[in-house]
Length: 359
Ligand SMILES: *Cc1c(COP(=O)(O)O)cnc(C)c1O
Image (cartoon, helix red, strand yellow):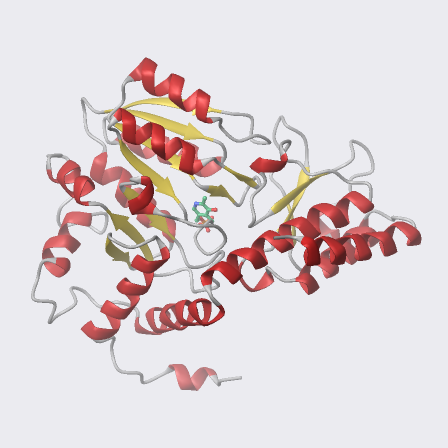
């Protein structure tokens, strides 16, 4: 364990290190994208995207399958865009058909969607939706803050224009800096927007001109060197394990969770199996006798209850995408729900078997 004192007195980040971080993030979204690093948690990266593309006269279809989509729609409207929210119940994800219909009906300039939803345990069918968006010629925004590291993100192959990236979920990196992966078409779209922020912390254009298109000898502002170095180390750790192996670890943790909680008599809150995210498994609480929040701990947290009923979250992302944290979660839930000893044993073996079988 390093001492906190070792964190002190480090030299500022060099342009070369900045480049290493940018290159690592580019690889994580499938290459061929500029990376704008945002010296804050990913919420600011998302707000910067919205502020940069929103304008009076621009139309957006904003898919809302959880709380982050609502927030994004709010920022687009604040920027003057005309926004149609395509909202699902949060225990479901959107279908490609529903997106196709909305694109045909509203003919938007922008399609915004969240990839994997940490808050609901759902994951949207992005590859299919991206193909529709490409055919419709819309600028697409993808919030992959929690998905990146847990499932493939292929911005260039899918034709996604703006991808928000965060470290704190599946990448097991610090929450800041966050990043935006930008396509050439997105740069044109932002440049054509007279309302796109300049001289602002929300400005993507400032970073393009002040850094990406500069001689790259001086990083504008002062990037957080501790967090940036930790982020580089997190990417190196992932690449040493292999990104496919990291994805598999997330799928295994999800399969183990679903199987283990089923043995405790609990069902996934996300209704359709193919909609379940590899980052978080949400588990429906029985109508009556739901355990209180105080019972949770480890990777278990209370879900934010809505009209779809109450649930809890098994946050098996990042380093917690492993069998032990899932087994620990089953022990905690078994105790909190006062499950019979037999069911608790079954839960452990079902989770272990599902972990081993998942591909
Ligand atoms: C976690 C997450 C974010 C970042 O939000 P915080 O709650 O501030 O960590 C953004 N989008 C999605 C989809 C997320 O899961």
